[in-house]
Amino acid sequence: MGKKEKEAVEEQDSPEFVFNHLYLEYFPLIYKYSYRIVRNHEDAEQFSQQTFTRLYDYFTSGQIIREPRALIYRIATNLCYDYMRKKRRVKEAMKSDSGVSISNPNPEGELEKREKTELIRNALLKLPPRDQKCLLLYQEGFSYSEISSIAKVKKSSVGKVLSRATEKLFRIIKNGEVT
View 1: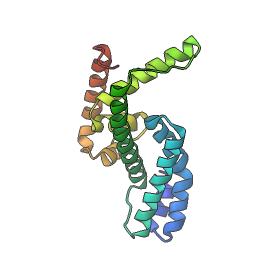
View 2: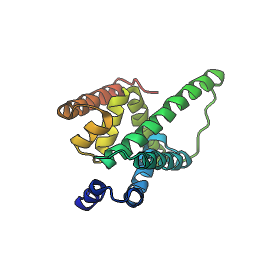
View 3: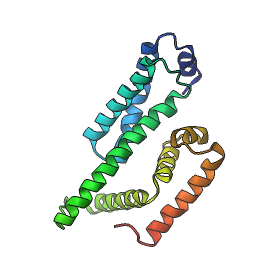
View 4: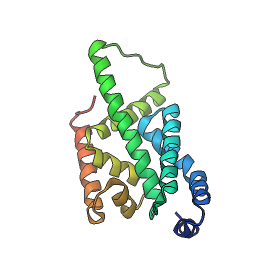
């Protein structure tokens, strides 16, 4: 968030103006972030809208928002991970009913790329939620301070959390612990 946006948020003169400004700036970023987690355009759109609905509730409640970017991403992260936990439970229940898998015919290069992406995604899901959040936020370009605020980790611990999470991720992939 630039200096101009911080000044606008600090003033809190018009919550609607500040909200609209944040919506215009962050909606596409939140959509992209949500899509990376849920891998579905409609769900990403829905979670992006829900994120800003909840943000608007913060503004109208009169609460002062010191780190709007961190709050926006925290809301989106929680919505997406709640959905993924629910989806995983449903998928596991359905998997026990049917072992049939449907695949799309793709060119070899695209198939290989998707397989690698899916491998990393499945490996990420094996990590604890805190590690998942931190890695995804870091990959999105967040500072340690912002990651600390969103993931509720001490700022001094973010680097170590990222380092250990990366090691765990590589270990999971190397040991073939993903399906």
